[in-house]
Image (tube, one colour):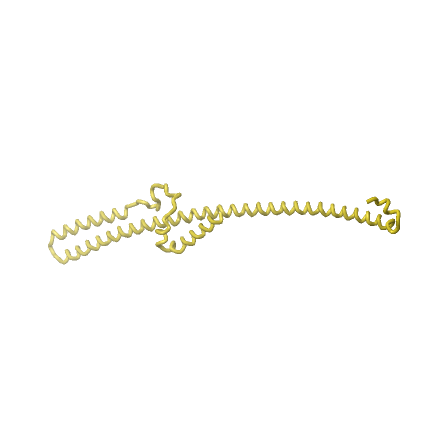
Length: 188
């Protein structure tokens, strides 16, 4: 509008300049508010980006640790199962050796009750030599002492969890481990 024409009459002579100066102050305040709001928005965006970066860094490090721990747990379960199988095999061999020694002892006792039986004494000595050879064979067998499988190419292969879960403590720990791994894979 033509403010000069409007200001020629009363009461506009006094009110229009007040209105125009108020409008200028309002526009200046609006510009100042807009600038401050843009600065605040930029500051909030920068803060949010830095926070997200920190969280991503921490989560990545933690996720990597969990992946490493999962691999170690899997390897431990497999190694424990192999050691258990080796121990069972050695126990069976030692049980057979003990049965042989017990049979030899029974023969000695029965031979001691039969005086001057040279044939029984020779058999007893022969059995003693066989038992000693069997014991040396059982105790000197170093195969799989480290618990490894020998070929070394099963590291990436999934172990037989059903077989491992047949024994304690794996019976309770393996299902927890597997469900945690499934949740982690579902979240990824």
